[in-house]
Length: 246
Length: 386
Image 1 (cartoon, each protein chain N blue to C red):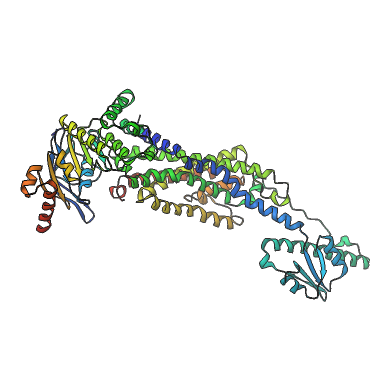
Image 2: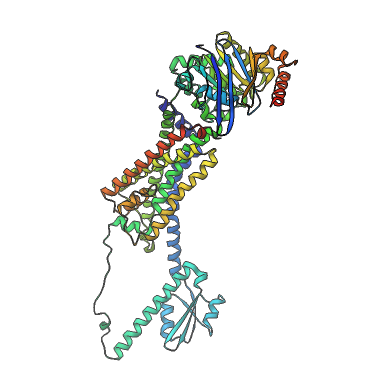
């Protein structure tokens, strides 16, 4: 799977705390997979492992055709990563952020300017491009954060709570953008605890609970498996089952 | 653009846009260095001069008229009082003198008067010395002897140490310590913001997720911090020079001449180079501490121990430097070595070996600190500690 994500038996412990206990899932090119779970379920650790930011064990770990444990830089070159509400420098403007990160991906000059203009049109960055982060609204900040992840046309998108702090218009633009990226053949791993959002955007979902993936399937499969009217109800029922089983 | 250079320029851009930090790093040392170092000495000298000229009240009992005349001639206002000690205690007089048999008792409120009382005691002692001398001369003459028998030879003392050393003698280790503290203060905001600050804000994780080797990120950050520290060094050395110039204008007063301070071009260059080597060490150590800490505040508390590594040796060396000559080993002391070298530079005592030892060892310590910082940067339990 050159442009997707394949994870089999992913394990990660922080000293005695087990953060991930054998997580397995796949995200195919042109697919949006939503990783759902409450805070502390292991979503961020999963994304960090996929980027090679933390050491992990797995039977198989492939992101955009490379193993992040062996060649993290190659993975990072092909992956776009956005984490919600964090990760901007107060004294840089939105444009300076995009230029700064663009250079890491080999973009510069006219190509970079053109790409920034495209992202401006796609996300409505507007004033955020010329304003320093410290003077931006939280919505503006989030737009820059998300735009940065799309900057180098990555094969795989890892989006961690990407709609946090976005207003309704920006949120809509982002969800539309994710749908467009999917149509263009990109694999999108969408981590969130906003379940209605996942219901709209995801082809398949995975319920993560205390480091274990307790369900993977389509939204429809989740609803019928847990006899729930919405994905949110299905998730709550799945967690209840897992607790009872433990 | 290589990734380390990209990080370097980003850090510098952030630094130069933070006007408050820029002001506190470059302009503040320029103003504070002369102010902190010379103002106390200047004020002390001024007040001591005023105290030496002030008219004090002397309560006297059973003292000969010659002594009263000598006191009045020295600028004291003399009043008769049956109990001079009580007059001083009650605040009616600054000094009390009582004649007792062949001697005199002098009463002063030393514990309450501090430095001013010491000046007063010195003035009274001077009057007694002159009075005693006059009395001896008078008695020798009465006995038909030449008063010069008391002075069979004259003794004069001359300070032959270099002018720079004479000028710096009144300042001890204070100047080197202050200068290096400014260098540390210059590096601190940039280093801690680029390490612990980035961890706290979550920007470090995003930066690490970019296709950049960690070594390149560290290099860019350390390079920018070094530039900030060098700017602070420039401010500190400039302040030192400015302070010397300002004091030169005040040096006509006798009490200030000891505190004058000036550095030649070579010594200034040596001072800047020493502070620059120290800046590299400070950046290395602070980078390590910043990566170790969870938050900016935690990192600040670690850095305060670095300041102690300067202050404690400065106090100790300041106390014992008159009695011991620094051996080569002193220049090798981490953090404090450059301070010992700067003191030697200011006293015109630094030789080639001193420079080689202090600069070389500081560079080695800086490299070790940076290597440890690189190790810390590769540890996920430290990088994602917050």
